[in-house]
Amino acid sequence: MQVEYPKPDWTEKFLLLDLFEGLKTTLRELFKPKVTIQYPEERMEPTERFRGMFRFSFDRCIGCKLCAVACPIDIIYIDVHDETQMVDGKPKKLKVLDRYDIDVKRCMFCALCEEACPTKPKSIWLTTKTYELASYDRNDLYFNMQQLEYWEDRPKYTGLPEENAKPQIEAGKPAPAGARLIPGSAE
Ligand code: SF4
Ligand code: SF4
Image (cartoon, rainbow, N blue to C red):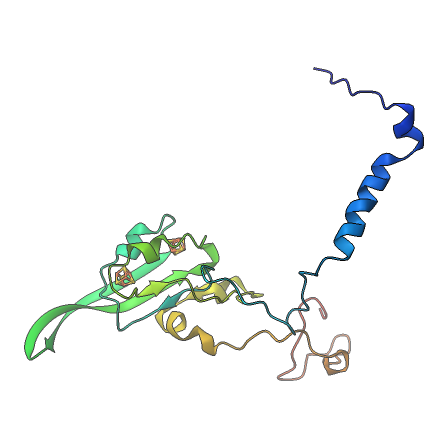
């Protein structure tokens, strides 16, 4: 089907009204407060309900696997074994975690796992306000239970090094031990 567009009249052709309409928007935005910031020197504080990186508590988790069942894309891997421990002076059979891994690179942060967790407070939650998870290696985004519990110890991204701090590598020679390479800067 052929679409017929209305023909522009002479005012649209010669007075460039559309152009002034666009400039009006530009001028209006020019004097509004800016929302961009100089990351990573400046950081924004996410809102209260922001879903950031996971947090896990080994002590709270009862190994029920409800979070893994609730996950729609099956990226939570849990292994448990039964153990008898003394609780309040009485022997009690408990499930003890051997493995609690999340393949975070595939996660869509739907928080269904957090919703399904029956412990109070939750053993897995996403309201940590952390969004600095960028990585050059996909495998860095597979977290085990220690990493899920203590990921705040991960080194934070501080920006690229100063120009003169880049390692100078001559063609064909290996980089000196400990040199920090910027991805894409050297073959
Ligand atoms: S937030 Fe991620 S891990 Fe949790 S249920 Fe959703 S997809 Fe699965
Ligand atoms: S995190 Fe919560 S839902 Fe998942 S195994 Fe532990 S207690 Fe169960």
